[in-house]
Amino acid sequence: MSGKPYKFLLGAIAAVLLVGASALEQQLNHERDVLGLTRYTELKGAPPVLALTTVALGGFRGLISNALWIRANDLQDQDKYFEMVQLADWITKLEPHFSAVWIHQAWNMAYNISVKFKDPEDRWRWVQRGIELLRDEGLKYNPHDVLMHRELAWFFQHKMGANMDDAQMFYKQSWAHEMNQVFGAEKQPNWEALLDPKTDDEKQRATLLREKFKMDPAFMKQVDDTYGPLEWRLPEAHAIYWAARGLEEAKLNERRIDPDDLITLRRVIYQSMQLSFQRGRMIKVMKGGFELGPNLAIIPKVSAAYEQAMKEDQKNRDHIQTAHRNFLRDAVYLLYTYNRMADASRWFKYLCDTYPDKPLMLNVPTSLPGHVTLDDYALARLQEEVGDMNQYKTKAVLEGLVRRAFICLSIDEDEQYLGLDGLAQKVYTRYESKTAEITNRVPIEALSVIRREVLDNLLTNELPDELAGHLRSVLGLPAPTNTPPAELPPGTEAAVPARP
Image (cartoon, rainbow, N blue to C red; front, top):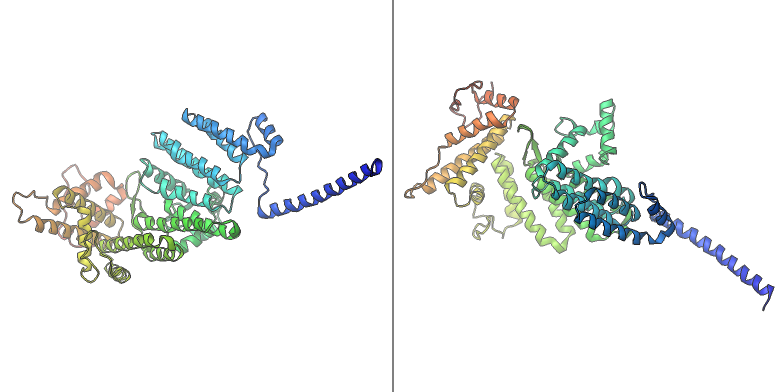
């Protein structure tokens, strides 16, 4: 066949193929839409040349982003951080569905760039920017991405929550201040007001929570019911929230989820719960700040989280089991310290029953369950902290116990006061008995002297006026004058004074 009929046939075949390709492309685009793979991201603020090149080259967006990434690294080496941030924004816009790009840029800001600055405010600004990049922008394009949820949770757990950064207390205080805009002065969130706000103030707080912090109050309440009660002014609660949110989002896209990634999210949850147990209670008693105390109310849920993790992560079961045992040891000790003797006895029995062949004390193989009483265990744990019971370490431990005891008394936590004060007395007696027969021993001040010194410092330097006045009233001390501090009234060291 030749001539015009041949050309006509070729043209007809080409037309049929084009129609078929068009129909196939429509089907592919539909499937991409269903899978959430087709989302156009506008490059706002980019130079016209970059915007034009991006649209024109299309598939070469990856090459463009690589070139920008190299340039960003050069700018970081030259300490040109603000220019680098703009480039990072373009890079993430060019590769909006590549989670490694978002994670790297956010990590770089929160960890690498922040430590270049000495001023805590400057550091906090970069940590915030890293969090915002993931939370406000990255998750908008990748709502089901497990790794991005894990990374965001890790920022709260490690960068803000841990004590590895010199500015970590500034981070905690700054975050608590931001959360106060949502929760006000209430100790626990008013879930009803956040879920169904009625007044203008309640609506403003709920809007702030949803729009600025991108948090759902209904899911927050669910997290608090499951893992709490949590202190939502502290970063550990938010680490748990974002990890739990990642687990929920993963259920909507299970086909593309690596099971090992889910394990990392669960690990963030039980590790952050452990931190919340250790220091997840905010005590607003210090001038210009706050102290952190243990959250004993979540002990059962922390233990349950460890047990669940052991079932789900068989590969790391032994490591989780060790962490669980250490948690139980800490729980028993803190309950004993805070004079919660019934709870301490119950969890001590649970510890012994769960790990009957493991020593209760570190480096003491003979301290197996059944050979150690609860009292012996608590004092031995304290011995671990004191170490060799020399004069200086013992006095430091005594001052810490007495100080915490008086702080508890100032906020009407009488049982905790009695437990801490009683433990201080036991430490002092133990030191005196162990050093009684030592020739030329170094004596330690009387416990009453230590109490008086600690109390005087609290009343004059640390406690705000309202709590200082309340503590004076409880202890029966006169109003402050220019005269030396008054002696503690008799009976203060043994029991809580009668309320006026």
